[in-house]
Image (cartoon, rainbow, N blue to C red; front, side, top):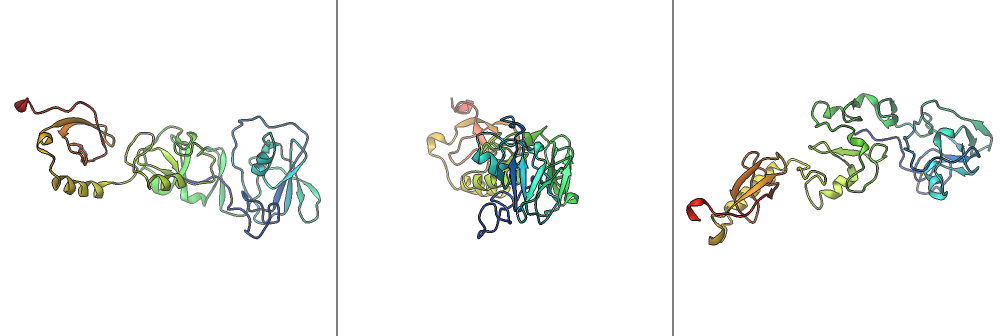
Length: 277
């Protein structure tokens, strides 16, 4: 998924507020908060467009008259949130001259990362634009490699990441699209794979497990069950294809009869074949 405009932060040798920017944006800018009212808490934040590669300004923001490198620095230090659309003045870090600044779409200075504004997303994304397309049903920008090859879920990016519970749509961390259509932050997806392989929302396999299922076939064949369990049957539900089936019980796993996945769950009582009851 195309990520929202952001930055890696300033040079490790620079202090916060220097001409390289802050920990959130590499731009050499600060916000100066004015006296025109506070932002409404909980207001949805749209990441904002960067159009200048090398900037040395202090931003003037519309609430408390203080200077900050960015919106996030302001919100972390104050008891209110910055109304970014009210920012109309910037101050040069080098000469301290207060200057007017206005963008009718977004409010951000940042170094060039081939940003582009997506009207449908309502924010600016890190490009290049030609590498992404906007899926109208998912309502987000996705890589061209996923065009026609992903499962659509309406407004999926407006959901929070099910692992860290943080916003996905405006995140500066890229999102990973699972085969089931759900989204995770890329970093959360990598951490999830250290513990498991299933989507935390629907339990669908989060990656192609075919090779592992075939290995499990061999392990099941080489691991006979004790005599009292050899003919026990159980009803299962497959998390990958949602098919119910009755299979022989095995401690290592029970394979779906339709898609041959072992991503299944027991969905009934143990029972013996009729001839043995």
